[in-house]
View 1 (tube, rainbow, N blue to C red):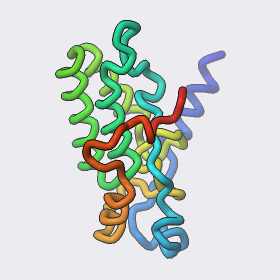
View 2 (view 1 turned 180 degrees about the horizontal axis):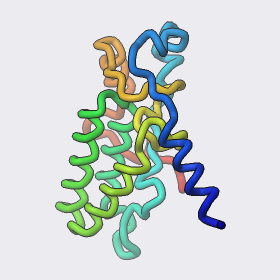
View 3 (view 1 turned 180 degrees about the vertical axis):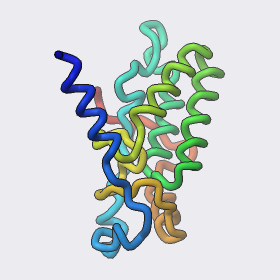
View 4 (view 1 turned 45 degrees about the vertical axis):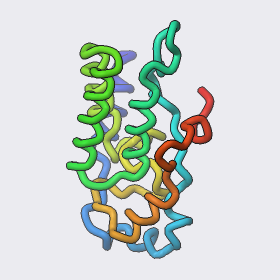
Amino acid sequence: MKYLLPFLSLLVLSCAHNPTSRDEISDFSSAPLSKQLNPFMSDGCSAWPDGTQAKPKAWLKCCFNHDLAYWRGGTEKERDIADDSLKVCLRDTFSNTLAILMYMGVRFWGKPNYKTSYRWGFGWNYDRGYLPLSEEELKFSKEVSPKKGESMDKYLIKK
């Protein structure tokens, strides 16, 4: 019985509606982009540690780059690429076992219809589902994203 409520909650969350056209987000998307897309912040590896006791930030960069893709959102194909990139980075940085475990976690918990702080498209002030970014949205997101070579520390939320 104690597992029934969490199971039902997951069932309801997985049935939530995602927008499938720009018409469904028109009430939100008419605002300036600076009011639609929150500044980028990363919680590192979310519910996972960012590294080992000996190397506390061992695979943090993998998660940071993954968070950047998830913050921006986009199509389901773009999410697949982000998750695959995370898996490769984790495998190359630490181990294949960790890569597989974290990959399974993001595939399940990162869906855009889950109301979590780390879901696909979490940077937007409204649910976008897997809608592609317009040229203007993509350009703006790149303008406000961390720059190559910039320290991650500025964007990390303390756990």
